Image (cartoon, rainbow, N blue to C red; front, side, top):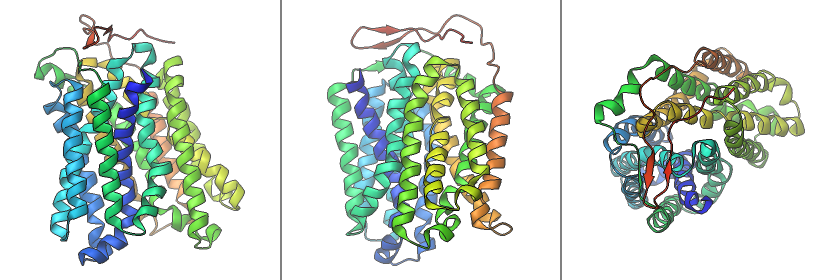
Length: 402
């Protein structure tokens, strides 16, 4: 089963690398395309906005397809978009190429997650989601520094490398993944969970949790300048510690969510993240303590996405492509919102103290988690089993846990 999930993890790794690495390539891209760095920065903004819109919209449009077909279609668009970006010679062309790339990426994350859920029984959903989303976390730990290193010679090489990773993932899915069909349901039935206040509350938790973290993360170089002295090497050590912590958090989130209620795992991780962010000014006094702090911070924020996905899938299995697409959109809205708040906050607080408002936003996410702990009763018959072409059937209903 793990071998079937690896191409899905590689697909999310490619998406994560594509998203994060562009920030490190902006100066070279700006010079090559004949624009300023702030103008080139709009490539990141456009990608995030397109992803946020396309994830739920295209997730709904492709929800009737079997998951293998949806993934191959999305990866084809993703690979083509990255190839076009690498070939682009004008800013306008590259901007359009990034929109195309983001449209494909918007489907990949939710389709990969819903496929992983359909391939395993309910008691193993957390582990499957953790393995697939571990690719996204690995992109922050490994893809970002590797991509930046490759891009130091030529930024176009990085985009070709990302396109290559997407192509390998597509080959793995085409050759090793069975056709996975989700429970049959009409379009109106698939959209029904979106009307429920509880679902909206869960999505707001995702957005707020990411906003709290990304209020600080984009400005970590400025926040740690007194510690690093402007050294790129020291900053890379801190970012690597954060990325490895995030990867570890994602991987342990699966077993924890399978063993305990996802609401409990989510609440504990957000409470811990609040404390870690609150003590950031103290922990950044020395390099050793800062590395420990970055690792703990990454560990805490690497956990929440998995129990959030698990909650949504367990609530409405037939609508999982749409709900997971909405959750992916909430992740990117939270990232954009947090980055904006962090920029505004620096008008009244020093960058080194950004951990304090970040802790406050994360504490709000913790409070919202407590408010959405009680799962609504949906009633009706249990959802039908998902089907794969191997003949196995996995019951979609999940027993309550204490």
